[in-house]
Image (cartoon, rainbow, N blue to C red; front, side, top):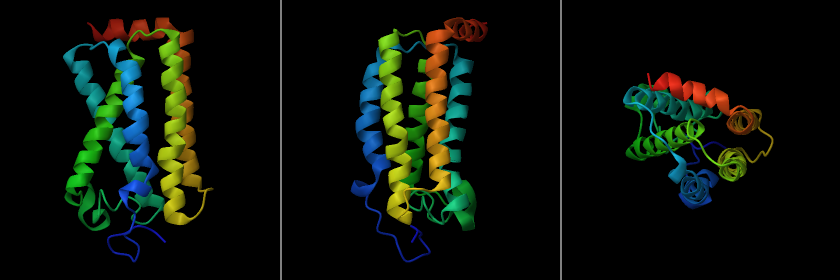
Length: 184
């Protein structure tokens, strides 16, 4: 059964949502690990990063509506009827703002110099975060651990995490080149 404002199951309490626990516990630690290493590029780069982060945050939730009826009903209880912004709840706006901020911090971290131990720590924590935040909620809703959409989403995020880790550690000149471009 799916969570849906229109359907029978609407009892997906926050304390049973792995994504909330991942946000609360793992991202707090990830932020603590990376925060002192963040370097702000120019204002226009920050704006572009925020646009990318917001688009990613919305896209990650929109995909649930494509394959799981009402999976994000606490965020978009009436999305199928009112479109993206028209159907978003106050909790949805807060969650998308939180996710946008988190994704922006991660993107800024990719562009910021950091010691290898910090890069490894952040990558390991993010590797734990993706399955907890995606697979567990999917399991709660569908009673299936093996869900193609959830596994695909988690795999993309894990590969992206380790790809960024590799670039930061093995190809720091690429990061320096991008940072140089952004400083004009």
